Image (cartoon, rainbow, N blue to C red; front, side, top):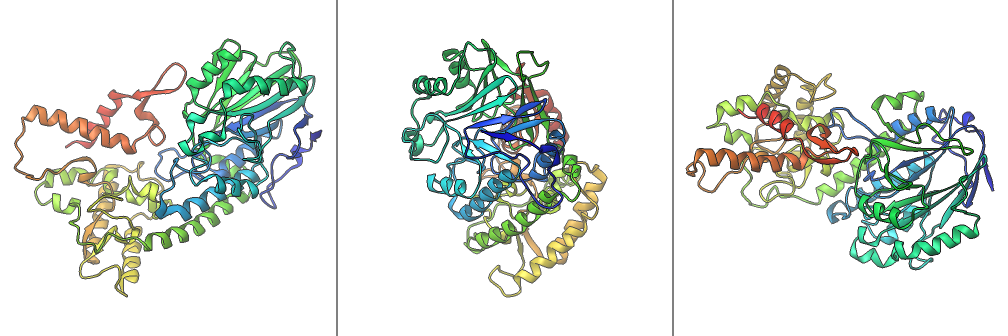
Length: 534
């Protein structure tokens, strides 16, 4: 049995050391101190640091490190993650496989340095295959904690952990619902509902007594909120289910009998906390969540995770650049999607309005964050990413007259162009916070750079065809005006919500009484629609 001692003396000043000092091969842990909590995350989705397009950036390893540095001053804790950690989705596109794998491994190593103790695999963790997931596990100290593997040898893991805190004993185990995974990985796990009887037998052999008020059973679950509710009905002796997969956000625990179910918002924007009593007395607030604000990273002088992220971004950018150079639509002969410049030949009033909106300079957000090569961001900050008539390579975002990407002078010319565009953003930290006058002045400067460098076509920024459609017989299509307006608004709404998700634009969405997103706030959408409509 390993004791957790001396957390208050740990420091980040010299290096990224683990915040929590545990025997990582032990199934039994002893906590010493007046306060103990389980901290948890899930659905980090490959994010090591916040992207620059959120109005109020949340999450990131430096910010989590700052929070934990403060938290450990008067708490002992165990940090766990309930899955969907490594990748942005359950599929890794072949053309960006190297960069996504690098980012996933870098994230895992960063979380390891933060003291992550246990995790369970989700579909986004297995996106690059089981062998890659095992490779990641071989390079970190945290363990998979799961009880329903079909073949115990298929994945290195532990089935449970036993935590002694004062007079209380906390039993921690995990499940993965096969239905939450890609079809090729479902045979890795057996039915959790049927198997959990065996898990309970194992826990009872380790000392668990569901009649003992000093014993608490905590389940890490990668199954989804609805599944967790039914699971709690079947196994009412579970005290806490810390869930994931459904990417829910509970403002307070959802109670099924005496079982409390919790999740937090994805991408480390929030860290969840379940606090435990050392005896039978009730804690006033057992569940809470902590917002990972940008300022938290400043709580640690010379935060080593800041340099960790900077080094990570430099290497990742180099990998992305090599990936993108191997792909191009530029000289394919396919007719390009019409950019804003061609639309403004007829729609000058609409163009004047657009030039005062953040859409007109939205690619600048990526420039400020130094994420110009990040494909998951480029999609929503430009026109035509991965579309026919669009582009797939950062080199192809802007096309210069009489200059091909294969020409010897191209790279130098492109670099000078983007340097001139960047000058317009001097001192700007957030595009969203700019007023219309400042946006227009940057747009004018950008247009001057386009003229200076002979830009004949540009996919940069959110443009007309990001939201509107151009029919074959445009501009001569005949449609009833009322029908046209209704159809246009509905079509644009769908496109808006493709980028303005609950993650990027939470203010666009409603929440139910449990704090879970329950659909678009139509009143807020109408307000934003009117702002963007001329």
